[in-house]
Length: 432
Picture 1: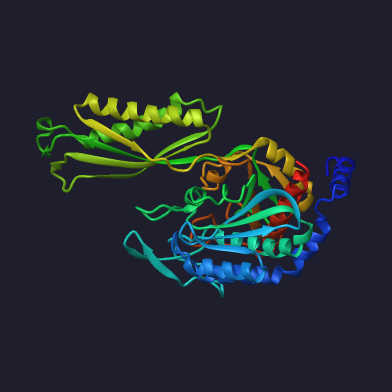
Picture 2 (picture 1 turned 120 degrees about the vertical axis):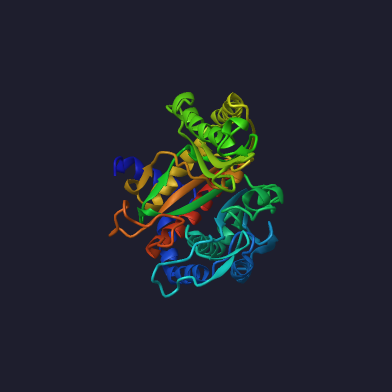
């Protein structure tokens, strides 16, 4: 520990103010660890896709009801909201866990491995918690049990958000955090701050990573339709070839990042994931479609990149006589950790897992719809270690893969973090 005396004084000061007894939280979390593991394994074994988490929602709601808190179901289709009103007046904080699984067929050899299937884009697929949302559910269910036991000492209200469709609602449907916010899960209860945790399969158990400011990227999908003139493949001069124009556009998009974007400010990514056009070898088609993703960590840079994509596609297509139509969706905003909130809650994180186990990291170009809560209220989103210390981060199975695996020893740390963050925030709001 770098500053042991300062850290000890800080912990004493927090306790003197009536804030969290971290040792008591640790002991309480340990006492329910077996239950938390059982909850996690149940949710893992019976996963459900986005906006289809009906049984998962029932399982969560039943637990919250046994704790005696106010419970709302069917939120944003299948979400569950629990409201714990403390014994003393105070602020309002939200704790969030996502509950949906992915269209991935599990390959891990586990007794509770998923055998579930579901429908995704009209096809039958395997379904798996390949991103750790099952652990988030179990950890927040555990925190709900610990916090309910402290109800009388809580100065304020804790709102538990069990959110569906973090991975994205099915095409043509609304869902996820955006719909939760739209339906009033923050405004209806007067939520002032929100905390979220994401397990990480390549960070050792007992460690926590954080990043103030833009922690995870905004994610926006784009579509570029390149229109030409159909012709026989033997006489390309008789038409306008959208395939060659599209190929040049792909290269041009990479030049936006490589030569036109201030990457020393924040990273950015433009990736084309799908190209579709044509029916046979000797026909130059009328249209080619490009579909891809944009990842940014700064709002100003995002808008500039959007404009450059439109200009690049239009200019390159026009240079060969083709035209290009560009559409960019609203996507997910930047997951933004409010710097003041991060600084305020960092001592809580350090007290929970040890200062030496808390790491400042670079931003991630992956995206998270927790960003919709963070856009409304000051928030903090943390990354919790879920990798066995015996594993190598370089070879540990990544998220969204069939071999994804989590060391369950990490769950108790998540329970403690949720609990301590809520308690310390609310004690800090007392009298405000």
